[in-house]
Image (cartoon, rainbow, N blue to C red; front, side):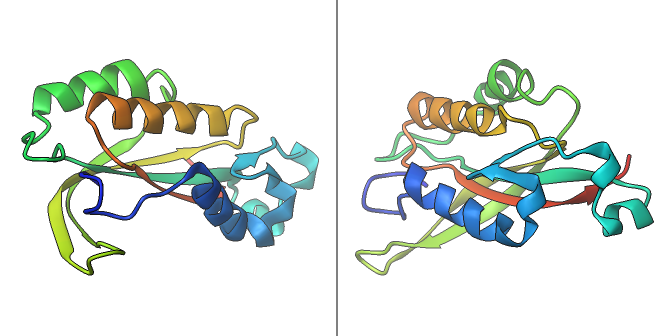
Length: 161
C-alpha cells in the first residue's frame, strides 16, 4: 500500500471488477459496478424480510499507515483530520475504525511487506452516489499520504440497526 514497487497496485478497473464479482449473485441490488440502486421496498429479498432487516452494502476500506520511501508513519492527528474532513462527511450515519497489521506480497519481487493499517468498516443503504463517495475517499488518501493504493472490499447483504 505504500512505495511504488513494494505493493500491489489496484486500478479503478481492477476494483470495479472485484465489486462486479462480489455483487454478481445479487443483481437486484446492483445497478453498475459497485453502485447499488435503492431496491423497491416492496420487493425486499426474502432473507432480509425474514431477519426484519433492510438491503445494505458492507464496505471495508484498507489504509496503509506508512508513507513510501521512508516518509514515516501517518500520525494519529493526520488520520483523525482525514477521517473528519473526508470520510465522515460522506458516511455521517456511522462507521467503525479498526487498527490492523497489514501484510502483502510484492507481485514483482515476491518480497513480503508489512505495515500498520487502519480498517474502516461501513454498512450503508445502497445509493446511486456510493461509487463516487468511495472514489473520493480513496483518491484523497492516496494523494494526501503518497499511497499507491487503498484496499476496497464491497459485499451486499442485509442489516438491521
